[in-house]
Length: 415
Image 1 (tube, rainbow, N blue to C red):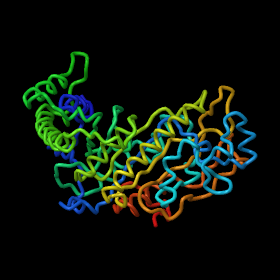
Image 2: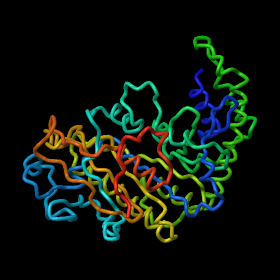
Image 3: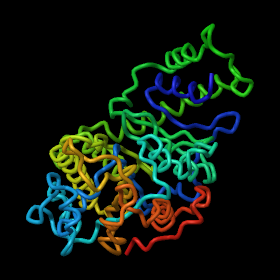
């Protein structure tokens, strides 16, 4: 049985997938210089993944461009509907919740983001965004995972990164020696079983069936049981700490009762309760709008914008708006032309979003040409890895050497 399979089995028994100190060097990465007891000034990054390929052209709408109107006779957003940004561009009307952030210059749109030789497969393209490497690379690790692995190890009660969601932990958070906690719900931390039951259940799940391969020398029984013992202790400690932070119901009505709204509500509570986690990762699915796009896309953008606005408003009320940045991305945009099913197909370049602190510019980079296309898609001009590096180094304050992004230029994003 592979170690990853074992960890997943043990963590489902404990109700949490969590990284720990293990006998053979599977170290839960913590940065010594970032683990001070006073974390009120430490900056936080929240990554929001819009899964499925968000239609950038109907999010930041080039409503005055004839090529846009011609390519989308039924899906276009008219000039009298958009929230104007300048004479040519406007927000989709569902993004009204973000207007106050625009006025305060706490929102920035990076246009024309992508990568060379774009891949239009959801799986392949998302893999590239997560790993910052082509699929031919043998080292399938994530950019955040490598960042954590590059940090000097020190044990604390909190992890530097946390994933919230029912989906498997994204590749972005994976690297050898790093295990990031994954929380599917607040209730997941209400552990009912005692330590012995947890161990027994995990031990049973790791027993190989007659048809399975034998456990490798690296994953010997003794090593795995030692790992389990530490993993269970750490899971229980993390469970107790986070359960304590979330034990009182949040009865405020300031967040929308939606998938993303509830995720960002939980993150806001953990931040305000003093959790030392520095990177949070959440997803919102449903952006693969091949058919009947208008209503579906509008609802998704409304959920995203209202959840985002509520998140920043809560942090602002508690005086912490300047230390939390949200970065929103999708694996690709959509084609310029609408299809026969009143939707759009997989494209290439698309906008990324930054929100929270004071931004240098609301719009970063030019809108890609709507007439000089490549296979019907917008051409990118800004590599997403340059955005990653800029956020990590200029915002979070970590050196990004371990991510392998030194060849990408820093962008002037923050005021």
